[in-house]
Length: 332
Image 1 (cartoon, rainbow, N blue to C red):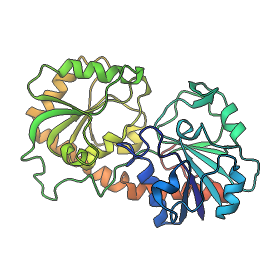
Image 2: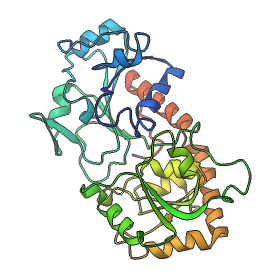
Image 3: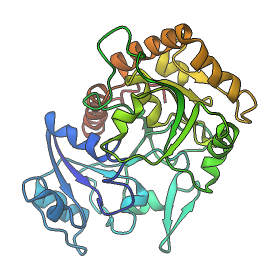
Image 4: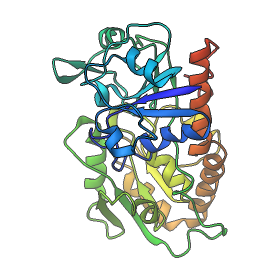
């Protein structure tokens, strides 16, 4: 199988802090099959070996597929490629869209992003299949799709090999990440505001990409959320678990499918009324915290590392290409 990966590395955070969850993850397909990367400035960024075809805004996807001798096309996010993705005219190859971690389908319309539940954008571009990184639960789908949960890079996120991996950490809860006025950060803003006066809480904000794995291992617990009303599994959940760090989050769809019956994370209410008590339990009852982080380590190391998820992605693309039943390991 030869994959044409269409992306725009100059868009948003494609090559920033989120790259380990998306771009860096996807190119690991090169360990399983041939993959070439195409898009604005991709050849300048990646070199001619990974990006042998120069970007041409007048080229059709059919032209690019023919020139690259590709079997299937994978694109990353309608937000990231919507401004240049040409229409697909042929039915000789499938076009698969990976929709990052957005719960709502994001459509491109007159140069602006609009959230809607229509199939116009996808059908006009010839998209055949959608891979969601967040579970789809409350909207009708315009195309066949599958849920491929996020995962943690095992080369960056891991705990000490000893049984006492929590010893020596800051006995604090830390928040790492961005905060904006977006509705998706409503609970996050309230959670930080709830804990900001506690001496055992540290709001670290955005941490440099290279420092993030180390910082994640320096604290007993990490404050997270699930995107307010989206209630989706953020990448931070898997990364914290792989680091042996207690994750404190609101509930999210698919938790039972992902982690089974054993408790693997600490949960607080959307209104944050119990957040302080939950956080104090993490810090003051370390035997329980260690039990739960042990559970999480078992599950994440068994099911939720990039080395697991990249095989799942390969199997999905292979099934789409060959007209076989789509493997739905995570139910959706």
